[in-house]
Amino acid sequence: MNREFRFEAPISIRWGDMDAMGHVNNTRFIGYFEEGRIKFFQALAIGVDITADLTEGPILAAIECQFRQQLEWPAEILVGTRVIEIGNRSFKVEHRIRTKDSEEIAATGVGAIVWFDYAAQKPKPLPETLVEQLKQWM
Image (cartoon, rainbow, N blue to C red; front, side, top):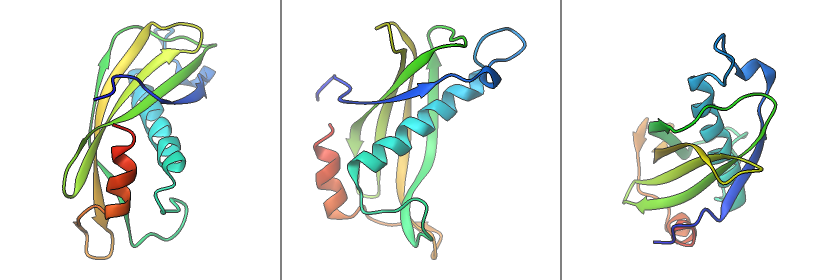
């Protein structure tokens, strides 16, 4: 497995992301993962317009986060995303958050993504074309 994050999405920390303790609220880290993941999906061109009326597509099944250091406004961060596992109906992505001007890691996490039939409300097998694209990002 390639240990490099070949995809990184730039995100600006907003003043409103901070909490009363003067650092970015822990819930915002999950939001940063989400924004990075959506930008990753767009870069993949997985054949799904996430703004359209979807009949099937990716859905987040689980997310975890390990906090390593605080973030504060103002700052530019980079959210790295890479594929770490591909199954029959799902795949996992790993995320990494770091400040743009540093290699220090602020947080890491893993998200489980299921390919979902929205009409039937149940998982379905990953499209083969998607599997081939995902393999390129492992």
